[in-house]
Image (cartoon, rainbow, N blue to C red; front, top):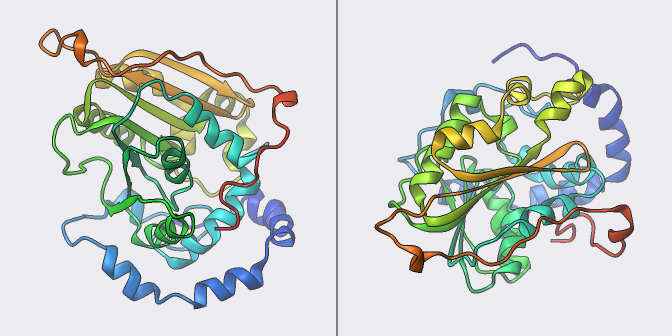
Length: 300
């Protein structure tokens, strides 16, 4: 395990956030679950946990996401570290969907916040949330049950999901790529390309790479072992390398970005298989943000 370094989060932001969250309620929730039994129920023996994931701390949590502590604390903390509002940022990905999806795969779904929003938007679609942490998936299942949403959560690796070719119309990933080495991000995109149908869409929500390059201190806010490499890269370029077309990145609130790509339609597939609806990128202005719920599924 690498030697930890103190971060701005630990020195300044964490004490402020702790004043805002209900630690007693979190503790009661954590104690109400048999995490060993529940995670064992979800854990798949054929899933190999890669070293880039298991050997690092994330967000100052010892053991990273492979702990119940990460699953319990992720939502209460995330609502305060996705300015100006977690739900608005995740909704940006939902609004960028330009296909009519029948099957959706949400990669690195974590506790399922974006996955739940996708199901609410597309109630008739079959939606699968995939994540390497069985602990995070336990929390995701609880949230889906509380919201009465039929979602399948699966323990798996986004690099090699095991699903057949052309299984999905839409593949999404929220806040995943800044937590993986660039070489792994490219593998995830290549796997996504394989999984998508012709004309299928991929959407990546994450931190703004341009802002991270221009604002060094943002790289030091949290304990994020791969964020500098992510910031120096280009999701657009990675998507192009993976074979996607019509790639475009839209900035959101200066520190976030959403990148969209489409798997080209082969001559064999023909235009009749296109599954696309009209879409205009949505720009958020401060005056348009009144009345949105915050944070995402905060009471679930």
